[in-house]
Image (tube, rainbow, N blue to C red; front, side, top):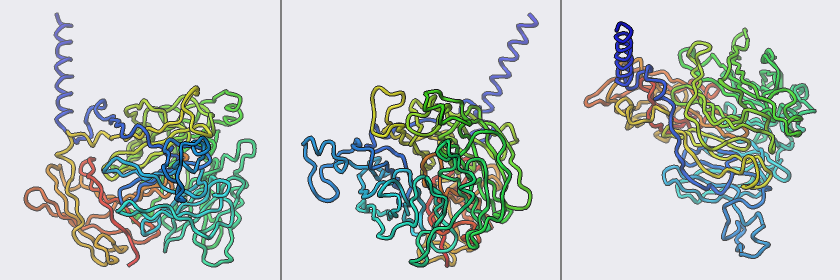
Amino acid sequence: MFLSCIKTMNIIILFFLFCVGLSHGANQKTPFHGRKGQWQLLLKNTGVVGMHMALTYKNTVIMFDQTGAGQSRYKLRKRFDGTMCSTSRNDLIDSTCYAHSIEYDISSNRIRPLRLDTDPWCSSGSFLSNGTLLQIGGYHQGAKRVRFYRPCGNHQCDWKQSKKSLSDERWYASSQILPGHDRVVVVGGRRTFTYEFVPKISPNEKSFELPFLHQTNDRNSEGNNLYPFTHLSSDGNLFVFANRDSILLNLRRNKVIKTFPRIPGKGSRNYPSSGSSVLLPLDHKDKFQKVEVMVCGGSSTGALKAARRKRFIEGLRSCGRMVITGNKHTWEMDYMPKPRFLQDMLILPTGNILIINGAKHGCAGYDNARNASLEPYLYSPNKRLGKRFRVLKETKIARMYHSSATLLPDGRVLVAGGNPHGRYTFHNVAYPTELRLQAFVPHYMEKRYHTWRPSNLTIEHVSGGGGDNHAIGYGKEFSVRFLLRKRENDHEVKFSVYSPPFTTHAFGMNQRMLNLRCKRMVRRSEGWVDAVLEAPPSSFVAPSGYYLLTVVNGGIPSMSRWIQFVHA
């Protein structure tokens, strides 16, 4: 009888705790099982593998593949040179009768083909201050090419190729936008141990040797230092991570000014080991001076050779965080729930990191990986060590080699691609070419959080901008207005700006988030809130260009609005 009473009381207590958890809405104590997110299937066929992906300020997403993959699944009626594509055998196998790049319109959920004149396979990209995508390098005839894509509202824009070429071939290189006026540094590449700037200051400007790339080159594993992780520090210097090592490079003096400790553990982090890296959000509270880099996953030593013999070694579970500013530099190590490589790491509006896509065994390259990572992880940087990872809802679609992901303005995460083959291959393989387009929907977008979600966000007034109402000068104040139905206190309302990445091969280039200072916030009638924010102090902290502005209330973000930081 006594045991029966105890059992009954336990059931009542558990039921009470469950109900209390649900009643908290946006409270961070919401039950674990209700915070895993959902998946949406958006398109069954994008036509083109999303090997490379970038969100534009016109709310479109550019995706493209390698032109050398032959026929895609987007057949053209007319070639881009104007000639018709017939049903003849020659045209059916002619790669110029197929699209290799598309523009995805978020609002209409439709795609349209884009022209590519040279092969951008394994290339890099950065956005200029006017929103133009500067796209660099690739394969064969595309290895020294520079391409531009200027987004437009009428869906008539297309790729344009520069007449000027790079100094060196850039295949598997990384690029980073720099402070100042629209200059990009491009680092590394296969059998390329240099960096160079785009555009050139003078016609005679060449590339610069970087011995660090020689030192980190693993000849027996196709480099393990390709697609080096590059991050711009708030002092204007460039952090470069390759294989297991990292440096801080002063580009003005062409000099390495810091050599950081090697990340602990064996294995490698860069292509073809293909871990990932992200710059953690910068914060106004320390004047954006604390710059912290995170590196996660990768492949074990010998993974490439083993994969070529059809033996797939388990990848790395470890993640390292290191502050690259100041004078003390140590890696703080943590561990993902399972091994992972080929993953994308995206900063969510909450400041947490989403780890999505990837595999558990093998390494990057054609048919070199097995055991797809179907469950995304959520990493919370501000939680205590050992409690930062959470497993989210799994997908049914494998996204491994040549997949990509990017954050959308509405808060969803767009996921595309996956092709571990040299051509489009759909049958008799372990992992077929993947053309379905998905969105991962984080838990905070669910209806139960609508009363907490800031809405109707508008930019009301800009002081000292650059002409456009949404162009804001550095260090200037600007006002925003939004509707807030429910909140706990003013301290729970935060403001961030986010520079979306150019994503390819497990690295989101130029991805950057800043938590802004709110100088004043006043609640008006009927739930309206007026806030005065302060723009970042300089282009060292936030390079000029378009950013997504988001209001976050108690962990629940608004839909984001585009703003532009410019030199006044």
